[in-house]
Image (cartoon, rainbow, N blue to C red; front, side):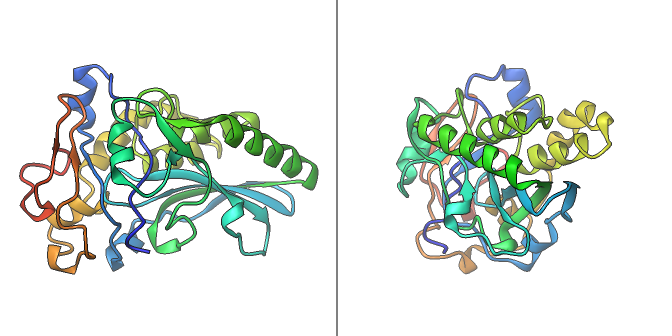
Length: 263
């Protein structure tokens, strides 16, 4: 589990104006996710809308960097399998592909990634119940979207954008920006589709608030003292480090990361 859970999504774009970069402060790093009792406390209760015996559940999950957005689907009461997961991520398990995707589009995977079906990593979710007919139509659309989504890019098309396309096909509203944390993206989607239209105007403030959340990612949890570097899985002591804006890549130990979690 630990070896492969390297968040493979982007919730910010490389060419965001510098003012927006300063506002959101979304620094990212690649490594394994952490198992932690604190991570379970970040999960939002499932909100459900619609009716029917089938569902689509939009989810965000935790990882070392800013997280991953994806959708799980199936029949109510049946445990989903890997084939019932769709999301956009860099192809394979090589962190270099993830880093490269902050500069140029890289080949993508569009299915299950490690951690997607483990509740302890989920940070937000929104479930929509549908009829069998609507379910079949949407699954067919997802398969088409997966087939044509051959690249992943921070700037051009990331996991939030992929999920937004699915939501729009279903007639749902999606957050107006894909430059945000996955947790904020899914939480905001849930609100604007369940009778809280004012949430659309709270997107930026929610994203800024998430910056200071000590459980928002693995590095933030270390900096907050919630977990300790010694408890990190093997191979995660010196993850690549990317800073959005004046982009740089380094290999300094996570335990010595200075400044704020979004540095």
